[in-house]
Structures are given as structure tokens and as C-alpha cells.
Length: 159
Length: 128
Image (cartoon, rainbow over all chains, first blue to last red; front, side):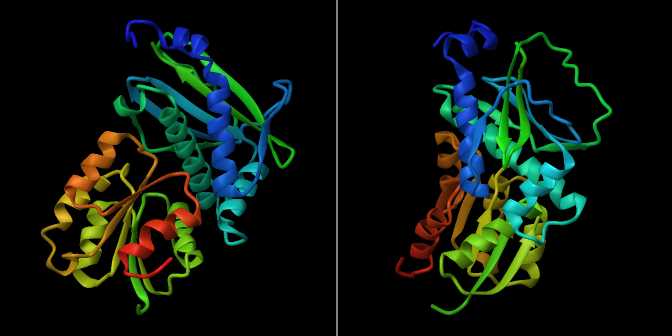
């Protein structure tokens, strides 16, 4: 596979969006015991919690998962049970979901897994911020419904 | 087999709890669970704890899982203790690196309790 075409081109030609959505669906089903399905992008996501994982190497970019505080707490409770109550545990849970989605996604891309490394997750709490990448690139965006609440997933690609 | 003393190494406290729960769901009776959030903490924990099983993430700050596996080989009390990697890093090169360093098993996240059961029971000499 040629390496001199942009990630944006590959993402389009190889139709990465359904692969990203499948990666999210598998993580939620296996680790949280809940099915999520792609929703209309018209769903507004209040991003009170944002988990981020960087990808470097054969695939460069940042994967983010964004949801409101209530949904983030629900994610943590689905993973840990009712013992998940502190904000630290909620952030930890969302960060780990993001980490697994990033890993699961890259594992599904032929020829990428071997040469792509993940950062440890970072979680931002609070919604009063804007995200701007300094690198040129495109993004894959999807919104999935988790127990009726929207969860926004974005893969910001950097060429 | 007697109750098991396990060392679980992951920078996510949530994931440490999930791994512990998966071990219990696999039917493994745990006498003690020691937790560490990176390789350095784990090596320190092994100075004062004897364990029968180590489950270790790869991507961690301070000291990652592969380096931990290399260094734990010099820890007398941990000789022969089976190490299972549990990680999002699913590439063939990571698997080979982990097994070459001394790990005995490799589980990719996301994982089911059945996968933990399958990998761990045989290492502990228990029938699934």
C-alpha cells in the first residue's frame, strides 16, 4: 500500500467511518454490555467530558470521545457498577474507553496496526474550550447513541 | 489450586477493577490483589508481595509493560510467575516483543471474561 497518499484520501477511499463506528460499537458492547448505534449528526453533544488519545506513526491524529457529564457517569457505572462515583473514576473510565476504541480501530486497518502507536489517554472536563489542530488534515465524525444519549466520536487526521 | 495472589498493573484504576472482576468471573478465587499503575510501582510492590499471577498493560507512563516484563526477570520472588499482557496494542510486533521478553499470554482490549478465563486458567494449572 502506498504511503504517500494522505490519510484523508485513504479514509475516504477505504471508507474508514464505518470501521470507526464498528470499533466504538464493539468496545461498548464488550466492555460496557450496551449496544450503541450511529445516530443523526443533528444530535447536539454537550461536551462536558472529552477523552483524547493520540495516534502516531503510520496513522497520525487524535481520537476524541465527547459526552455530557451524566452520560460519562453512566459509562463509568456500566464499567464498574455502582462503585463508580468520583469524577476521577468517571474520567478514568471515559479515557479507557477512548483508548480501547483507538486501539480497536487501528487494529482493524490493514497495514496500520504494526506501525501506529497510541498515547496514554487525556481527559478534559468542562465544555468551555475549542479544539484546534495545528496540522493540516481532515476528520471523521460520528455520533452514537448510548442509552439514548449522544456520544460524539471524532478522529482528527493529521497529514 | 489454592487461592491466587494476583498483581494487576494498569495506569487506569477502572481497568484494574475490570481485570479483577474478570478473574473472579473466570472462577478464580483471589486471596489477594496487588495493584500498580506502572512498571516501577509494580517492581516495588514485588519487593514486599509474593504473587502467583501478573496481569500487565503495555502503554503506561513512567515504565511501560514491555520494560516491566524485561526487568521483572531479575526479581527472584517473581521467577516463574506467569505474566499475561492485557493491552490495546494488538500488533504482531507487540505480541512477539511481549512473549520474547517473558510474557506467557496476551489479551487484546476490549476483552471478555471468557478470554481472561481461557488465557489464565491454563497458566495456573486449572481446567477451564
